Image 1 (cartoon, rainbow, N blue to C red):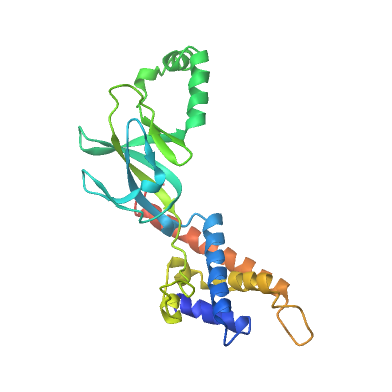
Image 2: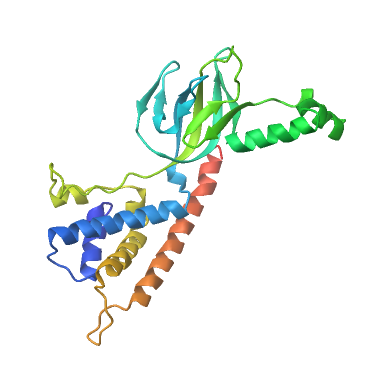
Length: 266
């Protein structure tokens, strides 16, 4: 069925000439489709992978990025584990006094320490800006609360004894959900249920998923040894992968102006 994994799977199986695949061959093809999905989202920041998440940052211990929640009701973060963060685009901090989100900064812990040390050697933050930009003293610049990321943890830069826990909103790219192959699990699903899965790549980049999976299947099984009988040459498959990848890149780029027009933050 078009729009689901079924159409891509069946097309790929026809290309590799396996009309009646074994259970292991079915599982291998699903694994190859997952490789195609992972390759695509590793190399492309998809517009449709943009989303928002929420973290409660403990003033002392920080917050694990894996604890990101999908919802926030004004008091409590909820819906944990709904997605996995690929990269963070922007951070806002909840200003409870004025009940408004305000932009915040996020930087690596190592960079922050290095910057602080450099500024201290120049006489401190205020002295540095006053000396180098006399027309724009530091006190005139709008200040942002800074959060620090160290590995998988986000900390507050406020280490004073009066520091408070805070809620932050993360504008992120998220990893897509893997295509599930439960044929080998204790709660095995039938193939039709597995192939009913869908996502925006299945709907919009079916050609890439198909040809990349075929290439991966070929690499794992050596199924396409060039023969005079007419098996597909690997170079033909590689050309189809490159062609469909470029089409997928263009499709994603064409979405960007639409998102910007709607006012989605970058």
